[in-house]
Length: 405
Image 1 (cartoon, helix red, strand yellow):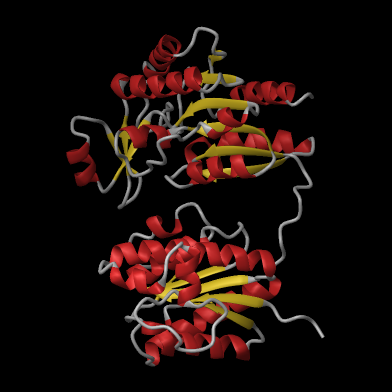
Image 2 (tube, rainbow, N blue to C red):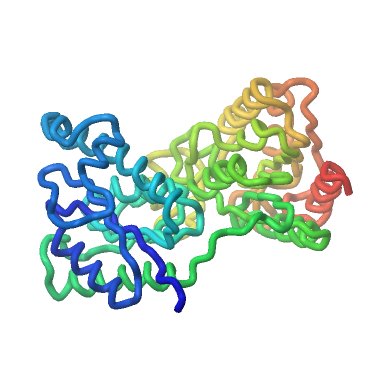
């Protein structure tokens, strides 16, 4: 008889015992073995669990009584989150876990997703949350967490909460049953960043590298994609990185919607693997709806991408700040393998058919990059648009050479 999959249920039983018992019942009906981690503060001993509130507090280096004595919900949450992460990681080493599910409001979501983010990529993670219809980035960050909006408050069982809780249980059960731990990477990996505005270039490079046996993983640079790529570069065995889209750097400097982390584009340099850059999408920043973008970036040229996003044309000022950013990284960490500059445009917006084309800008960026980078930085300016086949071919040739082909 096949072994039942095991799911870790994270629930504060002092406030969510009815809802947790319902999820447990649903999972049992679906053939799932469930272990409960209870990070409650107000009351413990609500039922038998794998990890008690006392266990959680002890793992954080304190006692449950001391946590209660803090008299501050934020400090208590931080302590119990620390302990929950330690307990969950220890359990994962000792027991085969096939999925994680949690439920809660803002506090429970913060704790539940903090634990989930410590689990490996690919392990099923479901967070049933009152916060799932709002700003979920602080909870999900760069991880593969499924957020399920509870619709009603998670406060008692009713026709709405039962349906949502059962759906969440069904989701994690289905995924847990088919979950397989990732095997060692069979093909050497190349990681590449892009947006649709430079997709033609990335597609051509990817096709050529796949022909010679590489797995090319693409990341969408909308604020979390590039950050996720940078994290995975440090975690996985990556052969090379092609950072075609650097808009997250510009948006970080100028508070655009696609802002990533302060150290975007630096992981591959730190790891010492072949690293190639192109200034893809440097021609624009991303603002909100048009009227908001006009207020945030006055006097610019705008292109309404959709009702939520406006592309805002960059100029020499923004390009110089980006050049300084890379110059600082190349000086303090190491030089890239090569930085390619397409002198006829940085994205589909920055083309003769585009809405933000300015042919004077690429040569200006080349001059600024050379000005702010160490003199021995390999910078190659080419008379092509970033989406021209010739530009993609030049990167591919250099990439193959760096990888010994």
